[in-house]
Image (cartoon, rainbow, N blue to C red; front, top):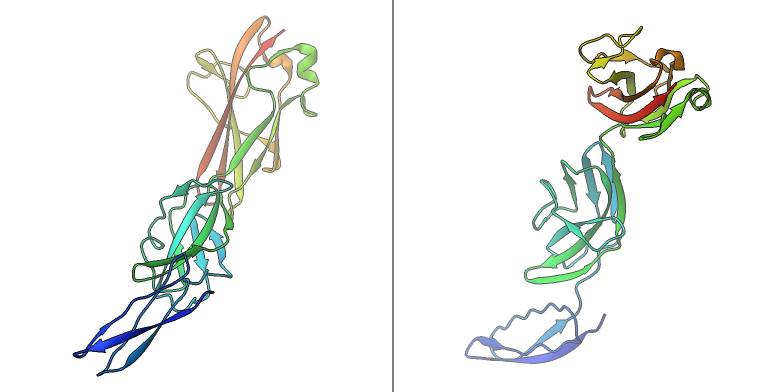
Length: 253
């Protein structure tokens, strides 16, 4: 920190002063009573240190130690690894006088938070960025079949160990997967558990575990010839939220 002192001369009860400081953001202040000289100091605003974050669903709580002589703080959120700033939502927007805040409704993704100390019109440099990953939506993946792939009888048998459909699911933070279901469509018809005669979509329960779900499905369940199919897998989280993943594939018997 660079500190310089100058003299301000008071005349007729008014203080007149000039502040000199090194390049950068500075603060200044003086008081005069009667006649005499007044010392004035100027220096950089401090950089906030020790910023911490805690994630709970779509809420991110940011906390930091006080940084005198700051009278307020601004919270900045970046898309991780970029210089692109995001609009900070309710709870952490504008100038804050407290040393903690909770931003609500944060979108899913990996973010980085930083805090800036402010005093009146002066602003300090941003603190070091602290990462925070928000995941409120469960993820579901298809291991087999692969999207847009074509399978012969032999290729189908070599897909999953169950000779059918398989994949994984991952719950959002603080949640669990309670159910994994699937539906299979052929043209305008849907699989009903025995054949493709259902006129509307039907979701059937998958086997295995939510983390590694599977559906035993013999290739002989597909009609002979070449046909296009759509597999939809739906996972339900403990929050009641559902996430669906769809894959299109072709089977040629």
